[in-house]
Image (cartoon, rainbow, N blue to C red; front, side):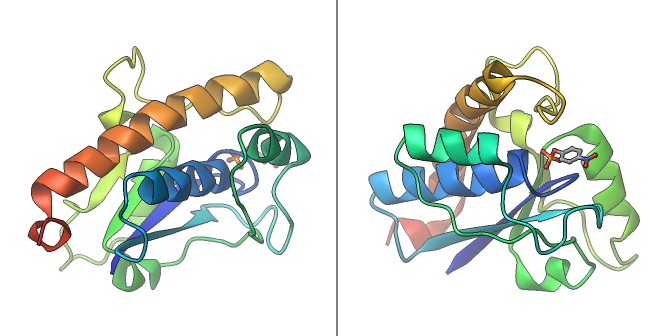
Length: 161
Ligand code: 4NP
């Protein structure tokens, strides 16, 4: 099983939506049971809380599945996950700050490394925006997750056998 962790700041808007979009794309690509994902936040702001209602609106609109409680990213996640995907550059630097010295950072990515349409490296934080901000995040995640799955298919021999 390949395990992917999506990480944002609060773990109530972007990263749980990424988890839901990614899991749906994995299923549609026929890779269920081979790749799994979870999400976490770099902050402790929303530990134990459900995803933001505006994220759940997107989940329902696009018939995704999401069952998640906010949790904080910890250094032990480096051992539990094969890939860590940050939503923005601030999340990325907070994650890398916790990386043990003897561990490589080559498994840590930015979500928009996989968005060929990106004019910025960041998935915008929609927390202070209206519903259209969440719709924009969904469209970014849809493109990026599909391209990330294509990357995994190309780079992981265990997915093609
Ligand atoms: P997220 O959005 O990082 O995409 O979950 C945010 C959620 C909460 C806060 C900031 C961003 N906050 O400041 O509480």
